Image 1: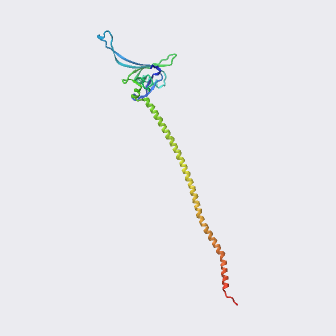
Image 2 (image 1 turned 30 degrees about the horizontal axis):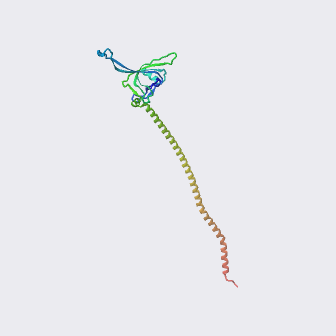
Image 3 (image 1 turned 60 degrees about the vertical axis):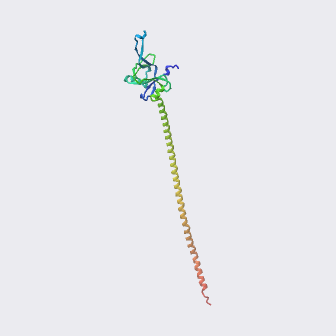
Length: 254
């Protein structure tokens, strides 16, 4: 199916070669992926008047226009690679690198030119020229990039999922710990209140028992007082009765 240039994507690896982190470069405008091959002339006398050539060494390069935007990570990566003579790992894809079937070239490039264009009625841009410098240059499909070079996008999504799960677990754990702490505090309050109430009831029971014990001695004391009083009342009558009996028993004089 036919494509437009806006569907193609230039990716820059911000990770390692073995475990890449593919970041798309949105500041790119027009881009050209150059795939060329050298040739050798092998024309000989038996060529029947025709020149014969055979292919020799392949070459690849990337030329693109990028918006001049200092402060952007991709812009500064290309600028620094040019100034510091360092290589930059690129994947020039014809579509989303995460979609199976998309194709492109992946290699380490050296930035050979980084000019600045300042047209009067245009935004400031740079026409970047990158030359392939890596003997590991490969024409790949998206699946190859994902499988053979670390499945970075899938790994990033997996890391996000794992981090989300860890955060959810930690939040649940923290929430449960807070709930447990609240429940323990409530239980402590309930136990403390129960102990306080139990102490009150125990004190009341002891007081009632003391009162009962004191009450058992009160009736005995009253009985002793009443018996003594009766004896004092009865004793005079008893003495008078004895005297009368003695008088009756004496013989009458006549």
